[in-house]
Image (cartoon, rainbow, N blue to C red; front, top):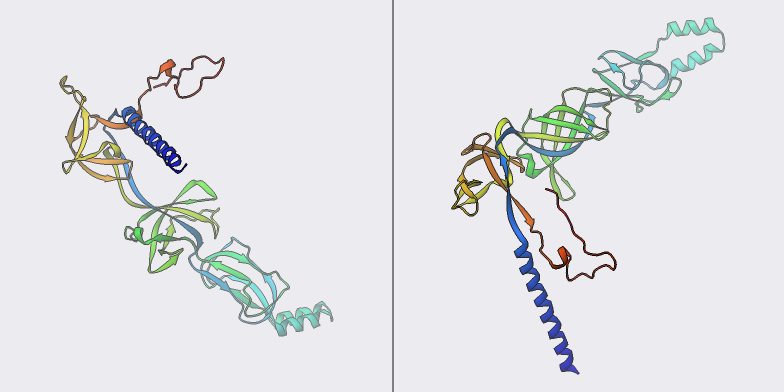
Length: 331
């Protein structure tokens, strides 16, 4: 019994080995490298580093009252632009509020007297900016810890950039900003600050980078997610070909070009070139090729299988009543 079991296992392993052998042989036979012809053309190459950031105020300032009391009037709304020294609100001190409440019960004349005698305290903007938060309404009591208004001087994008990319970033470098909320709008910006100290985010060393948008558009809001593309290198109107057309042969950068010689069975010959920058898809040609010159780009394809029954796999059972099936590939 034990001998029969071992024999069965051995036969199964032999069958598996035979199947693998013929499958690999079949695959190698039908895998063929083909080439398509393209022309050297002029184009642009831009190398970028991508990161994700958040739109937020460059300086966020909570405006707090100098005295406790009651808010009499707020003169601004959220989104309103204010200037340094502008009066944002009027506040009555606790004593003034008590006096006015007592005078109000004695009549309008008494109330006017105390209003003229005891003036409210102004809440003044300390800088130019935009009101991004209005927390309180007139009539509410307020302490010196409360911040009825929050002011922002301008919006920037703060992003976390991986340490492997941070060495490619420079101050004043061009950046393309695209907000998740407005994916069709591209906003130009520049690198304003690169942090000197790193932060660990999910066990990855990151550096905070501040990007300054050239314009602050009306729809931009603090907290929006922004996708950034830092321009590392950019060249325009240069000779380019697909990256996959370039090979390394005998320590030389080479491409294949069509051969007109009848003796050349492969119909291609290698040509040495000199390349420049690449974005992974296109590569710059510095020497060796000219605009419009044909270059061969490899394609890996499976050959059409010439099987019996007009292309029907003999190992697959035929469908009853369906007859022979054929397939057509359009070029």
